[in-house]
Length: 240
Image (cartoon, rainbow, N blue to C red; front, side, top):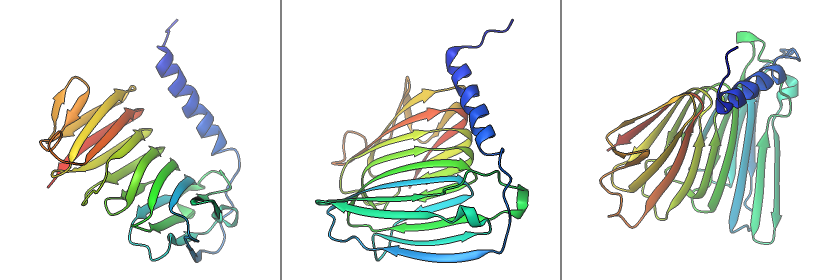
């Protein structure tokens, strides 16, 4: 009998569970709907943003006039995104989630989220991706903390920009490829924790499981990033 290491067993159980959850209910394809939504900051001085998409394409960037400016394109009625925002004291909590985890139904389904967030307000960003592609251009945001759980598909996280403060980030790889694009002129420290996938780096120095750039320890700002490779690949790229 083949005995697998505990870490691999856990990953396989999670994969099986995820597959069952996203395939047991058939998706009913209808007319394509295009909807836009904006959320006002309402005086909050800091915001926690939580995004959860089960199936589809997710794009997140800065540059919003409001706290959130979003466009949604979908053709499964039960996938209509749920947007909720509350302010308690000086802190806001914004959640955007896909309510139904039905199977994708093949190439006939469409679910695209294009989300822009405000640049100036401090943000804690937490993202959970399912099946599909995701792209994050986050260098203009005033991020304090970042957590991204990738799913099945390809993910690109771009942290290029003029950072004014330190960042704490945690990127968990799923099944597929995750690319992390990092700046040259801001200190970067990446600590890797391999699953049964792989971590590769381009343009960074490696000591054990720690990757740093030339600006690490010299710049006033440091991007502290922890990456975990699941079943797939995480690629670190230093970009000038």
